[in-house]
Length: 139
Image (cartoon, rainbow, N blue to C red; front, side, top):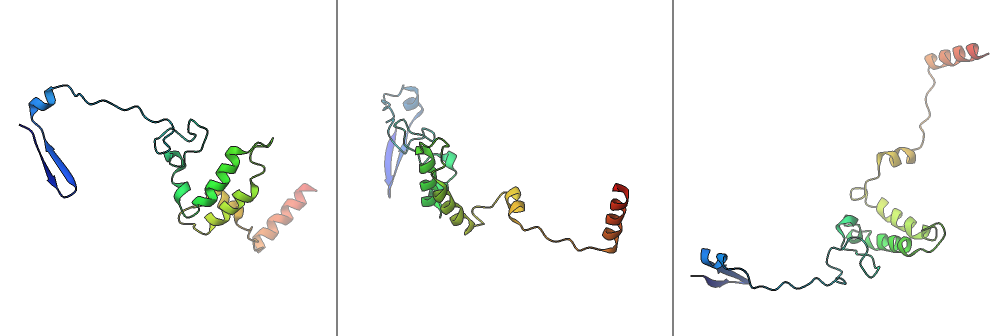
């Protein structure tokens, strides 16, 4: 004896064991291949970019989402011999935006090391002696 009740916006359906023993008569509707909200991977069947793809990691919707979309679209649709070589301005704008939000877009450690200026090493008596010894042995 199944029944249904409404609680606010929710509809609660109680079913019996017998209800579950009967095969379902529900008809499944085929997915729309052009539905941009379905997960079809990065590129939709029509060739457009699927901005909802989880593979983008939310980059398209963050504070630099518009810059990301511009750069990524430019690269995707680029017809240059060196793909994306015509997108430098878009990628530069995206990078500048991301640098404003270091907590959201942390740089890789390698990039941080390359970006840091080389600090001058103070010469001590030990380093002067070592340098003199090296010069003496190399002559």
